[in-house]
Image 1 (tube, rainbow, N blue to C red):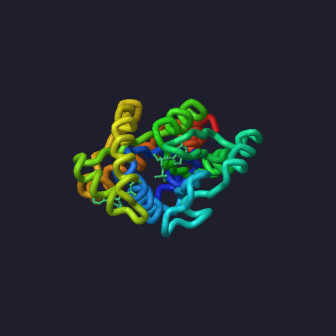
Image 2 (image 1 turned 90 degrees about the vertical axis):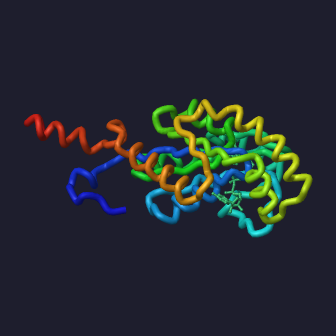
Image 3 (image 1 turned 180 degrees about the vertical axis):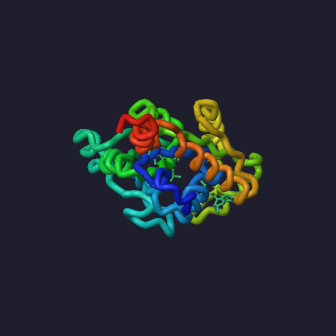
Length: 217
Ligand code: ADP
Ligand code: 5GP
């Protein structure tokens, strides 16, 4: 990303936690990937899960795939910022690195369900910016789910039922985006990121700048 070139624009900033949720299949992973491609100062928080990998998924890239025993050990050692049972499996957000990333001025992206979004907000209320992605229609949600690699009729039916349970929580989020045209939805997500970065409390270098302006430096 370029900026205006003013030295104060390049000063310290505190990273933010961009939390994206949606009913499964609405497109949050696709949107998150596009953001990661465009911005090199955003890192994805890679969740830990006990569900088996889908075709094309890689351990350590899409998720850290663990057994239930390993997952329970991580809970005991307090290695999660949050964890939850979603569908038949356990999912959790590792605590390590997130705070360090924020302090280094990097944003951290979270692809979690509403329970995860709530828990992350409870833990880090000033850092979390939450976005709920909605499908344009129930039919398109169903066809997107069916088109996904590894999908079966049973999985689609189940996830369609669970979609309503997830969408019920959309009002808890700071922002909502309807993912109809992907490019339009992506531009909206990007605008949210850029404006949230300008929040006064995230622009750490402005403290010094204002002191200087006031002759107090
Ligand atoms: P989620 O992470 O919310 O479960 P994905 O990002 O995996 O959803 O998207 C589900 C499927 O829908 C994928 O095959 C993806 O390529 C497709 N998809 C995502 N956004 C759009 C869109 N705006 N229009 C059409 N297809 C889309
Ligand atoms: P999937 O199995 O389709 O990748 O994800 C299923 C659901 O689990 C999605 O709604 C996803 O957002 C959620 N999920 C993924 N990682 C986490 C996590 O670390 N914590 C919580 N609470 N939910 C997660």
